Image 1 (spheres, rainbow, N blue to C red):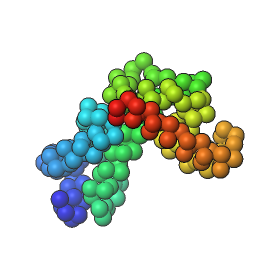
Image 2: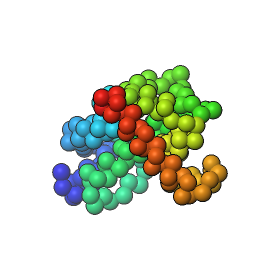
Image 3: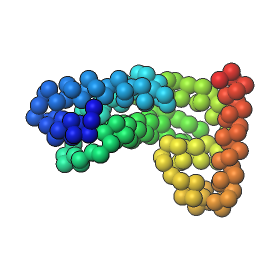
Image 4: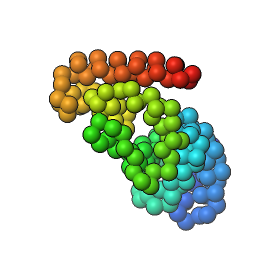
Length: 169
């Protein structure tokens, strides 16, 4: 879909059922494929549906120069918010809300591998990957020096990689 056609459909998505159908037909599968690489297919389908619901509610959508990139960025943000809502960090353990239906699908083997991390490492994962903080922003939260957080991050990634490899992944 080219830029002008996408923007024309985007402008009329609230007033034209056909515009929404065309966008949905073109992007739904692409969104699912893109998001499923990280979160799994069922979760990706939910994100895709949430994206189209958001389109119907959004006000003053911008003119988009790179439609597919823009759609993927919006969906990545939706996925990140959904994950943040479903998981939270409590007393050094990852705890899932009662209504988090995607726990195993979302985290599966990674969730198991994270059990080998210490409390600070789990906090770094939560803040950096789930809440989107940079390592520099995390340092004063721990509190620790940036170099120490960067080194811990590097070690925890190696630890996770080794654990996942041992698990056959």
